[in-house]
Length: 320
Ligand code: BDR
Ligand code: CA
Image 1 (cartoon, rainbow, N blue to C red):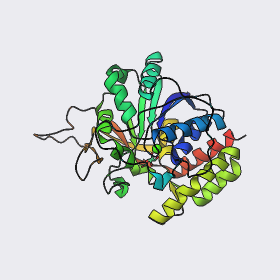
Image 2: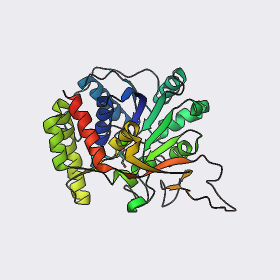
Image 3: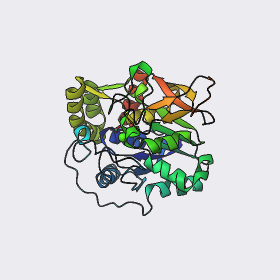
Image 4: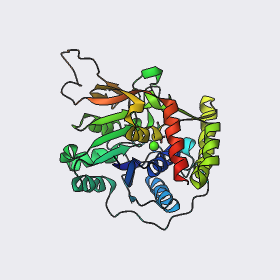
């Protein structure tokens, strides 16, 4: 069955991969892109979302989200990873399309209330818009079908962090928002570094995307040059890890992932700010900040070859 999604995103090179993957796959009905600061400033990221909509004739709405975190001091845009313009500094013309008049979190609330039980929220940036939606309309928790998040790192396979030794970027950008979203009473699945660092788009794989996926493949190849240069310099690898597209892969085919169940909390201050911790054993403690919080899913392993096939097959079919 086709799944209706709102994709909350900070476009972003791997965000563009995820957006076009969602647009390409027939099992997903991409209703809207809602934007958030993160990889780029909010104006730039929103421009990038509108650019994709226009260039690839997408029918989704675009709603502009918030420009900074709930409580913490803002972290600067990730220009070292995604370039000054968020798309690897290739030429991006300003689109003529415009955004929905509502802020992102209100767009989400309205859309969810108009189709109770039908919409999956997929978030691949800082979780501020989702937290704002929960603050303004807590009743949406019972109306959202599912929440799928790219973010966090729970230490499986030794993956504990990317922007700090113990924090992943999306959660580190707004730990307070992440803690609100993870502890809300709605069904969350977190697709974090535990699995996204276990799937790899090699340079050769991206060449195949360019050669077999038409204009979309060429675009993804063009913007990923900057990204690959970052990965080469920072990690000494010839390719990139599969962050945001993994969240879309989970929506399309959850059987690609093994998940673990238990409540999740986020460290909101101090040197481990942004660290994500899941309590997955039923132990008893006098003090327990996880007690009485809803159990959520954390992805702990992935069938990476099947994920890569799914991405390539989706993009190839889309280009025909
Ligand atoms: C996440 O951070 C962003 O830079 C990427 O777009 C992805 O959502 C990976 O840690
Ligand atoms: Ca992202």
